[in-house]
Length: 293
Image 1 (cartoon, helix red, strand yellow):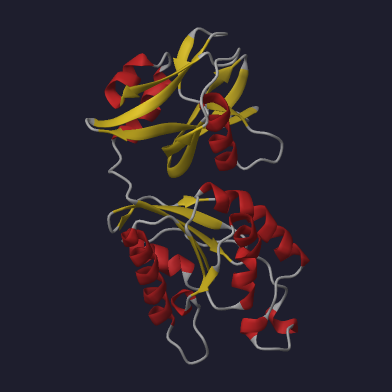
Image 2: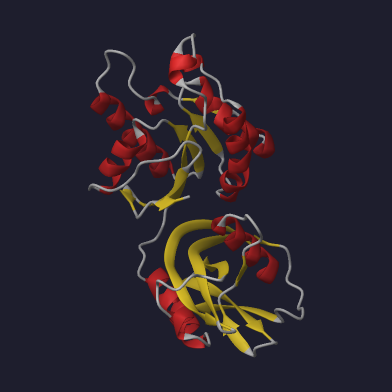
């Protein structure tokens, strides 16, 4: 299938793993309709974010609750004569609701990674498992967002740090709740600007977590060096990752690109739209490829 061919079917899924005394096991599903073994996946609902769909489909097919970590290669192929694209993430299993066999999936089983690659019925699933196997162990994930829309700076007459979200921004903040929730954060941290705190407010209400205000996540104030703030933001993100707790962070557009460049060790397009963000997987103090949300 050509990469230029328009995608008619969008789906998402996960390489769900759990630790064992001997290493790692991967979750596969058996589908009686096709008589195959595959990675859990499913079609996106209308307007659904692919990452939300991936976690939802894993839960629906396997009853496993999982936390996404690293984006894996997107697979393209033809299904029933139509172009299909499946987005994949590695996911750590954190719980199970108790699987009940059904008409879509009648068996869920866990396999060592090499055995899982042999068990799946399709080469593209084996390739995704291979990409997962090549990853270093992920020790922490940080979900980083830029504050949502807050009107025009030039039309606000008060201190810039007090500028609030506008109607568009409030809608963006509400839309972030499912993505923030996927990371299952134990802490929420925000830059000190009012619009940053407000961006996390809906997620804080959903998760019943306080928002910790952190000046290390602020963009430069008048007279302050930009590099100083970039270094502070990068150091704070690295420290949060080193602590090993899942966290969600809201920062600002003038420091996010530079902080990610420093953490990845090279240049990249890390411009971040208001209300947008990144899933940042860490292996120790090393940031793996950031995943734009």
